[in-house]
Image (cartoon, rainbow, N blue to C red; front, side, top):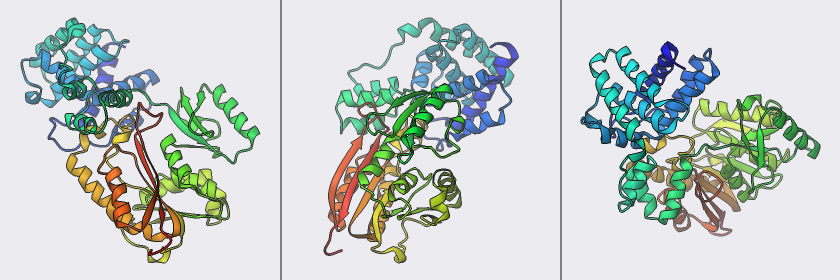
Length: 450
């Protein structure tokens, strides 16, 4: 890929980065990385290889931002913080290609960066761009990284993670565990799906055969018999059985949360923050046609996501009103449901630090102050929704984060402030467990004094 075509694809990446990456650490929060998907949709007419290149380079520059800026700082007399944002992002793109994209010749990465600078009216800086990138190319095997004696700084640069997050995790876990987590965040994650347990054995085997014929590499997940990891997937909606509702896209940690809740046929389950509906649909499979899943969230948009999943996976239950979908603010008490639920699923808004592997920009958007604010919101919701439980009913609290304040401390708060008894707690860690970072705590409402 060369010439005008190469410059065009890199120009698109630059447009994305100008939106996604802040000028400096204290800049406004990064926008949702769905922007990359939206841009690719806009250029849907482009060659598949070009779109793949755009996606890889844009996502890579976001994921490796701290590492890229460190390397640029080693070879530039101008500090990263003093550079024009457009030049900094052009350099990030060039360094990423040199360090991480073996299919791109270093010369092409340098030349196209210069072309891009010129195309943006920065003719006077083309020598600077060329000089920095040529130096990185020459010395990429001799880059001086931070000393391991300062382990937190070393981890921050090598794994492109803000120091404060490395410090937070280092206070709780040993060095080996922290490094495994950080390394796992940088690995591509397979698509995880939940094959319907109610599918007859013949249909399950048929699904496996057909999906394999489509080029999917299928492996059984070791944690649950109906969970599978898929690789080489060209659009999940194209996979055999998707439209027919034979499977749901769902992470293993989310499946485990529903499993641990111990939902039985005929139960009334309230999922108080249900979008996009993975846990609610999983719960519906367990409650059956004689049960009821009350799936709630705060906006019409989120309800639309739940509804789409319900129509594909359980249209019969939706039609018979055994799945109810409605707008409700989880922090507001619904007096009509007091003491009625067998299970309340409270998978609450959180910092999302456990899914950095899927959403690289989270590491830059979340702050310590936000974690405290989220923990307080979680307690407010928990102090409301437990009241929907019957005596002996189950509260399933979960988050997709790795934060003591949102997880273990809130679990302790539940035991101290609410009439609940602990059944089980589980903190899943990427690189240690075969899942995202995820916290699950199961409680039972006490029989007396409730």
